[in-house]
Image (cartoon, rainbow, N blue to C red):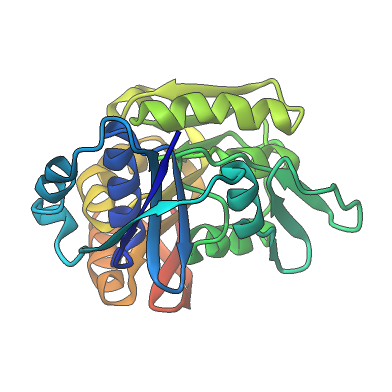
Length: 277
């Protein structure tokens, strides 16, 4: 069977990247790889529909992404190609996030196994890595934790490894929901509650720590739900937005009674910590 390689310009954000790969997956693309040229997507030649791809790229949410080339590829092991492009990520020399095909390394305090499939959260992106950095400096022992917009559930998994008690992971994407079960099992954890839903799924539950690595608009829209679920002196970590968005996040957090603690910034991406007095 012939395999086609589509080369797209690099998406302008992680959110745009996830949207593009998800929608290409709906069109029959089954593997993706980032490189210096941009994003490469692969599919078999049967059922090829370039008009559908062109229509997809007309979406406002994918503005700036263009199809550069389509090439027929020689036969090869595409799983091997993906594996070769996926490297473990080390955060603060304490936490390593790797794929199942990487060998374990006991020299790290936390050696997490994540099979991303089409979910967000491998620590390759600045937002995930920065929240992990903040988490490693936080006391999770015996705390009830919510991972909101959990993606691969990497943050929920780390929270459990750090000693969290009741831990809930919520995501509204079915890919992420199913992927979370895989990753929880890969890490030998059996007591994370995985929920398919949005902020309203929190209900009347209360937490000591909330992790929300999503995006600016959703954080601002749903922050009220998060704050209502925070116990006194609870901590919340926001990420998924740019430096220029920090002021609006701080303004809304202050309006809802949160106290700014600190933030990290890398390549214009921010992770920020707040506390409920």
